[in-house]
Structures are given as structure tokens and as C-alpha cells.
Image 1 (spheres, one colour):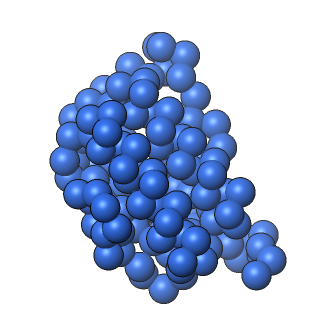
Image 2: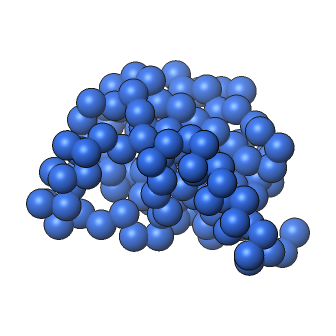
Length: 127
């Protein structure tokens, strides 16, 4: 289900999954954020997985949009896990001093879903 952007947002139980398979330009990242928040409002998901396996590069603007999306989702009662970050991307962001604070990370979608299951199970959130 996509509202206005190019990136499909799928529902798996109480979790939303966005697998980003296109390069995120500034406008695409902002559209994904708007789409995600709109879908979260309608669906009330407890978990969100942002899969960036398909991205070769992530600049600081895109990283900030992804992090802010996770923070906004948390304010809406949703845990966010960012998965699939390439080692080069992680190293570059770390060298630049960028922190993904407020967003959990995992190696891949499977580990991200397992992490969400633990987070949701450990800290039930009000409905």
C-alpha cells in the first residue's frame, strides 16, 4: 500500500515493512516519511521495519529523515528498526559523527522482525 511515493509499505501482522529498493533522493525520502506517518496513523502498527539493503549510499540528509521517521513513529506508539545498512554506509555515518539515536538497528529483515517481537513483548504500549 503506497500513498504517494515510490516505495511500497507492506503490513505483516502488527508490523509495517518498507523495503527501499530505489536510491533515496531528498524528495523521495521526504515522501516516504509522509507516506509512513500517514499509514501509521491509519493502521496503528506496533512495529516498523525500514529495510535499506538496496541503498548503496546514504547521505546525512537521508539518514536524518530515516532517523526522524523512527522518532516520529515512536511518538505514535511504534517501535522502529532500521535493517540492511551496508558496512561502508555505517562507517561513513560514524566517521561523520552521525548517530541513529532513537532508532534500533539490525543486520537484516529477519533479525529486525525478531528484535521488534522482543521490544513489543518487553514493553507493551498502550492502545
